[in-house]
Amino acid sequence: MAASQRHIEDEQLTAYALNALETPERLEVADHLAICTLCNEALAPYLEVTASLVNAHQPAEPSAGLRGRIMGATAALESPAVPSTPVINLAERRTGRSAWVLRVAATVLVLLTAGLSAVLAVEFQRVSDLETESTQLQAQLDDLQDVLYFTSSPGVTTVALAGDLPRPRAMLMAYPDNDLALLIAVNLEPLGEGEIYRLWLVDGDGSRYEATTFTPDEHGYASVWFRAPEVVSHYDWVRITRDPVASTEQMGDAALLSAPMEMK
Amino acid sequence: MDLSHLDDAELAEMVVAKNAAALEALYGRYGGQVYRMAYGMLHDSSAAEDASQEVFITLWLRAGTYCPEKGPFQNWFLHLAHNRVIDEFRKRRRGDRFQQVSDPDKAMESLVSLSQTGEAAVEAVFFEDVKVALLQLPEAQREVVVLAYLHGATQQEIADRTGTPLGTVKTRLRLAMIKLRDMLPHLAKEEV
Image (cartoon, rainbow over all chains, first blue to last red; front, side, top):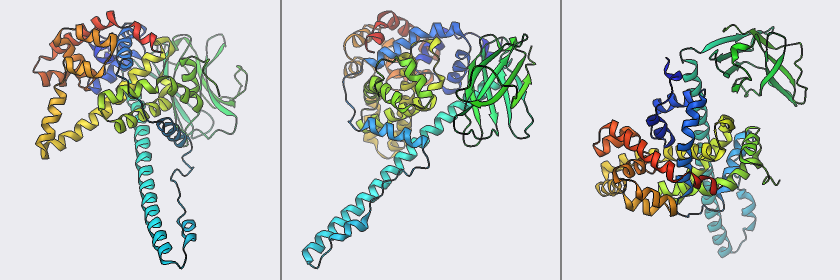
């Protein structure tokens, strides 16, 4: 039996719950947990232990500014085009210059202080931005590792979707006898206002099921995990459409990408 | 926007749709726990805030991986949070190794800190029922839990550090978690 299909031993589950596994083993366990209800049920009480430990730390309070920092960082992730570096207009501060030497000296001092503050503010912001970017990259790396482990697992079958347009392509990956699947799409066109991509599963009698919706990134790339109502091999076709967000549950006739589900 | 009537899973779903108010609501519910855990492990308020920020950014980016069928959001999220704080802890530990080369006093201080796996560490970090439960564990089992949970050590690292066979470490960790499971689970629900 493939590693990802073998149930996880209790010793691994307890270590996983405490984050005490080496990275490759942790990913292997996570890969199996993504598809196994039994092991998730066995893991649940140990996750409660970890949660209890987290909940029982001695009192300590973060600064009042932490909430704002977090919300600012996430907002920056969603609006990369918005300049996040504070701008301090030194020219405005210079309007206080006068002929009085003392005032000039004081002004120079203020300018120096303000200049230093500006430099420090820029540097702090730059470090903060780098930390945010690092976390974002780590999350993307985690995603890619999940994908890699899944796609390289024995027994995972791939269905390639194609359409009339030459560039957009997609792949659906799943264990035929499981309801969990991964869709990866590339070169998708950017969506207009109020639009979304939908993934449909179509079974033998023509019944259509909206498996998931997704939005590609700025490079036209999307990867999305979803669970089907039945095991994936139950369905005959997989299709991707581009629809208004508020459209009904009926699939339109024109599929952007489609393929027969040849994994039975 | 008042989202207090929504449960965690509903808020997580909104975070997937990039609803900042939902993330802020989850911060309101769990920000304190995450920070206290980070502070308990890192012993530095600035580092604890950085780690907390990373935890919530990770939630922002990966809330879609939460699956309500697999259990309560709290357990999934606090496990993720602990994982992220351990990452930060390990990063700092790698930094300490460089420091140890040039600063023997720092190295000794670090080793003393890492050796605090017994009652002192438990007394210093935890409170009430969890502290009592941890102190009830046999010393060898408490040691592996504290090294893994508080010091971010993997099973292999615990084996190397304590000179104990890896199989023994795994067994001790499992036995300790089973005992804690029998003593603790009610706490996670009470603290929501």
